[in-house]
Image (tube, rainbow, N blue to C red; front, side, top):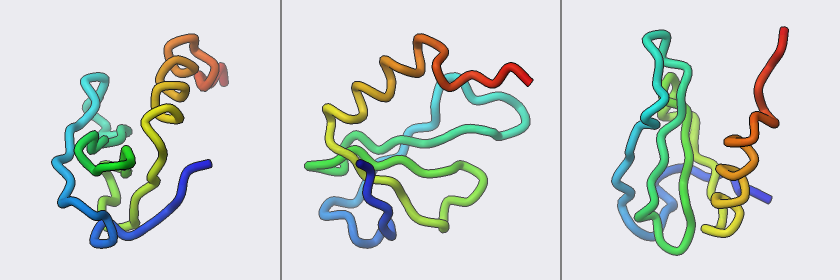
Length: 75
């Protein structure tokens, strides 16, 4: 289960990377893989709202599920 925290609480200053699937409307997330021991994720439109932190295994499972289209909206 992801933990929601303030970026300042991360043990290492994260280096954020924007998803390669970013579209012009900015609906995207940024990920910091260097936020050891966790992976940190935040909304590109509201970077100060905090971060979701999860284990590398949880992040890998999320990416695998996203690739299957499980989170795609049909409406």
